[in-house]
Image (cartoon, rainbow over all chains, first blue to last red; front, side, top):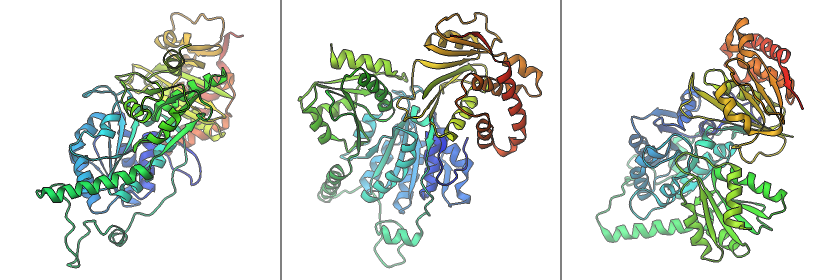
Amino acid sequence: MTQENKEGKYVLLKGNEAIAMAAIRIGCDGYFGYPITPQSEILETLCLEKPWETTGMVVLQAESELASINMVYAGGATGKRVMTSSSSPGVALMQEGITYMAGAEIPGVIVNVQRGGPGLGTIQPSQSDYNQSTRGGGNGDYEVIVLAPASVQEMADFVETAFDLAFKYRNPVIILSDGIIGQMMEKVMLPPFKARKTAEEIATLYPWAATGRDLKRKNNIFTSLDLDQERHERHNIHLQKKYAEIKENEVLYEEIMTEDAEYIVIAFGSAARIAQKSIEDFRKEGIKVGLFRPITLWPFPTKQIARLAEKTKGMLSMEINAGQMVQDIRLAVEGKTPVYHYGRMGGMVPTPEEISDAIKNLLIKE
Amino acid sequence: MKKEIIIAGFGGQGVLSMGKIFAQSALMEDFEVTWFPAYGPEQRGGTANVTVIVSDERISSPIISQFDVAIILNQPSLERFESAIKPGGILIYDGYGINTPPERKDISIYRIDAMDTAATMDNVKSFNMIVLGGLLKVLPIVKLENIIQALRETLPSRHHHLIPMNEEALRKGMEIICPVHTL
């Protein structure tokens, strides 16, 4: 299952295992989760590694997903780096907790290793929670930062990125993975060990946190409820300003062979890996297809896609769903170039050959 | 160099762990590697398969539909994957329980009677290491000593006393694999 990482050496791990190992190493204070396929190895690995004996990290199997997310709410409010993980239907249950965290400005990390839906769906991979993550299943005007890893290395790397963003902006962050990246093994360089923040460090760094006041200051109270609507509108305006700042500063993406591309495929996470193979095949035939991979799904790389739209003959959104990100692409492109979608649903995963056919039939049409 | 390999058989035969040990030894030789299992309700008695890709360049898709090498350990897997081998590719199969042997003429076919051989050895669980030995003979892209080292790194230490037996199984596999039809 897991293995000791010799410092500075590559190890072979599942994406789920890499998340757990990285969490321990980057100084995560607590994990609260409830098992569900295809992400149960996160909790399993944490239990095997017993970080409570080494770094002092708390690992708890909660009684439900609702309990997990509310434990994250509470832990985050005390300035601790806490996280949970689940798969699609479990994350659906967490939506209330996520909007409460956004409203009360509580940092925390939620990992979603997606499976096919709707409902309890299937245990096979899917990307059909794009809308759930970027639009939010919760109520109110709120945004969640969404990171989409495409490799086991990024599963490991994005844990720290997610916590850094969560604390920089006091906002929940979702790592949106899927059954492919969660279950596959690749070589990975785990992050170096960092000590967990001490109580003194937390009190200094995060004056907003509920750390115990010793009669020196006013209570730090966390609530998303405010019955004074004028004050509550001011709070909303403050949140929107924060979201605008995140949009301005935190967009991440990768471009592969887009420079001279006549056609662009846009894909995130595992779909980007599969699409890349078919793009490599087109390049061998001299057909100029490129790949644009959004790494943050919110904030979405709108400007970058708009810029690419001006010089391409067409774009294809390749998603393992019925067509969700394609809506954000169309908003970015504003009709400057045709935008198509290809996807599979219900746990079916397209092969590179299928994507090549879609590129030929929908995009190139020759 | 890039090799796209599928290993398919019954759950409980050690298909996934065979793939993992092979992937681990490839990693130790500085290859890029991906290991992707069919993770459905597979269990003992059901079918199980894993795709292992070994390459000296960054691997794009871990999901593929055509393979350079297929290691087939039961009839349902043979029916499913024989046609998915690239022309010029390699098929290794265990004869045990195969009613309809492979027929393709545009690939190299090897037979390894690992199930029967494992029954004569002290531990029938060494079956998957016999098969891995066979792969190593036909496709020597990793060294035997690195497979042994990979076993040491992936097995919990309480099982390390089984490593000599696994080494014997690997060597046995290299010995007993035989060509049925080669290009």
